[in-house]
Length: 262
Ligand SMILES: Nc1ncnc2c1ncn2[C@@H]1O[C@H](COP(=O)(O)OP(=O)(O)O)[C@@H](O)[C@H]1O
Ligand SMILES: [Mg+2]
Image 1 (cartoon, rainbow, N blue to C red):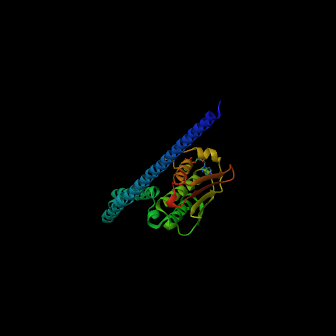
Image 2 (image 1 turned 180 degrees about the horizontal axis):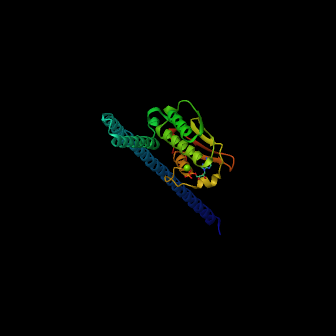
Image 3 (image 1 turned 90 degrees about the vertical axis):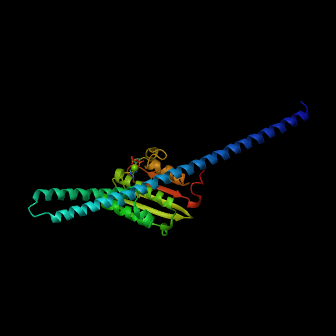
């Protein structure tokens, strides 16, 4: 082989290599674009879901709730007007009023579960305070809150995400941990939001817990991890059987959330 042929081969190889690298870069760019597009879509679906919950919660509270309140009032008026000798009718009406009252309380509880109005009206710190009190009153779980100041000005999507994560984590503590105490710590570190929810319960195997839940189909641990990723954040679960459980997540500031990990 002469020298000229060798050089031509090397030159051709370089060109081919350049072409392959360009193609690889193009594919990589397209993959990144696709990932960003998917993240945006999934976040819109999640936002629509939350909006629907908000609408239903309002409808339950203001529509059905107010009708039940009016009904209770009217039953009270009829009861007051009954003659003293209307024994059986009075007891039936009193039963009807008690049933109405219980239905009203259930309706309000369901409305708050769907989307607590306090989150939209007063912001994340007030909503987390309400959540902690509710778990204390309903489940005898002592929840300690340690929250960074200024949370009420947080981006609305991030507030909703954090509220849902704490709600699910505390529900898990009640369902699975047999714990007496839970800690919710929320800090802002270099613009990133860091949330930790821990308990002193029986703990679990993190890999098995994380395996449950598919994107958008679960509000459990798997669902939390998927949603945190949609916001460009990181999620970790530290737990050992017998030693309590802790979930930690880090979320980037709102303006670049969701675009980072793509
Ligand atoms: N705080 C906790 N303490 C003990 N086990 C937990 C805790 N949180 C989650 N787990 C375990 O992880 C599993 C998955 O949790 P999750 O995805 O929320 O689903 P679910 O609550 O519907 O079972 C639970 O079934 C439980 O075994
Ligand atoms: Mg759960």
